[in-house]
Image (cartoon, rainbow, N blue to C red):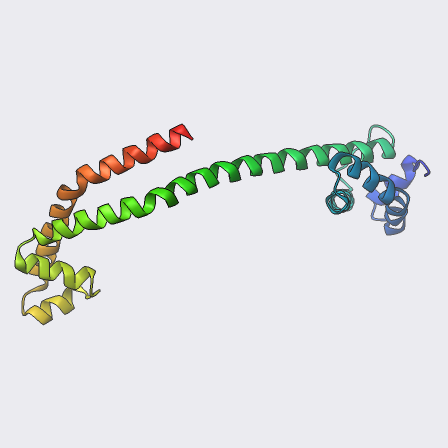
Amino acid sequence: MKVLPTNDFEKIQSGDISAYEKIFKDYYSFLCRQAFKILNDADEAEEIVQEIFVRIWNKRQEISINSSLKNYLIQSVKNRCFNHIKHHAVRREYSNEYSKEQNFIDDANPLITSELDEKIEKAINRLSAERKKIFLMSRQEGLKYKEIADALGISIKTVENQMGKALKHLREELVEYLTMAIILFIETLNNL
């Protein structure tokens, strides 16, 4: 492998594609072997070296080489490989934490969901007959306030008032349960 004279890199900086192809041919395999020694993965090693060469071409006018081109390329490969390793370690750590949280949520979800469903049903059953009917038409049947008003022969304003009162009632009935569920969830996450 030849050391590329400085003036050849200057040719690359001026856009000389043949000088660029020359460094690619001279250094590509060598740099892939260097990256493989660090990563122990041939595909990732090649990808990193390709990224370095793309960067060299794209940033050729901004790059300043204070040592030999060979040293610059070797250092670029090392830096990129170590960044790659750090990035994967962070992703792996995040993935592990996310899996723990998701497992807790999945495990707790049937219990929380069934208990919450039961509490909601009881709270709805404690609504007055008219308020309960309006609430169920809105939430279960998916009707708009105007459609409910037309079906029951009442004003939209009455529907709005009854829905507001129904939702307030449900919030009051479920506040203790929801607060406990949130506290339990936060404590469990802190213990992970």
